[in-house]
Length: 282
Image (cartoon, rainbow, N blue to C red; front, side, top):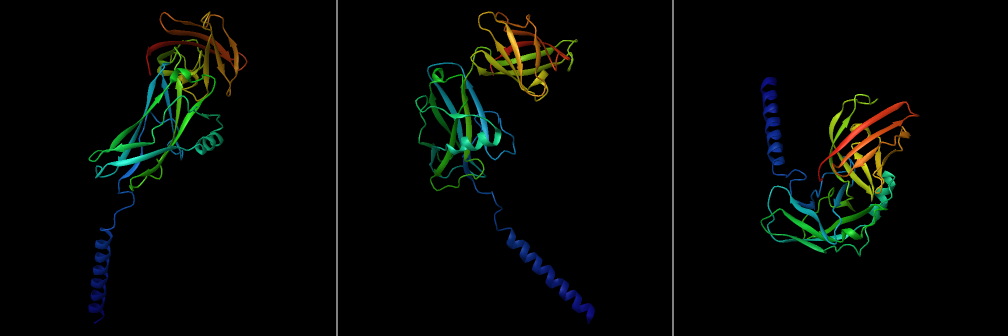
């Protein structure tokens, strides 16, 4: 009798588990519904763990250009109707980001751009573009500007909790901005004979930042300042290993769009000899 009772108990327990398992399959897992959110207007510049996504967009200097930011209907299905997405500025995002990252970004002057109030994701699609006309030639080089954007409503659709707010840095490119090939000489102290693809990003009218940093490898921030009259270049590095000396032969060749650089850091203990050659726009 004890054996029979045990098997009856086991049968009942198995049946109960099967019922619970069947019931659980009709509950949709969290996040299975489609949501409205911002897509990626460029490569992500913030850390993937950062609660606020940050992007950098740079433009050729012109009287008028367009900032294009995708709005997506992300999930298992296409939009079942036209979805009107309302967009607004969220200035507090700038303060929060500046405080968290020790930056000094400012909101782009409203006279420079026109922000549409709405974007429509058409029925049967999953994406629409927010098109923002902007007068790039009126953006000042001497400050860093952003657009703090927020999705406020979406025709009753669910708004993504994580990606409904973004910061987009907007700035003009100077004539040195672009993709480059970086080479170091055999005599260089750190990573001699290095050959890598890098970017020089606008940091002022005659100033660029090396991406990635020091010797196209380390996180130390390195800037090159170009004299537009003489084309002489001075290197600037304020983190960890301040500049010891800039050699007078450091220069920019506008004909070949090439930087020839010699400088030292750490009180002259470390020597750098770099050739950075233009490859194309970024």
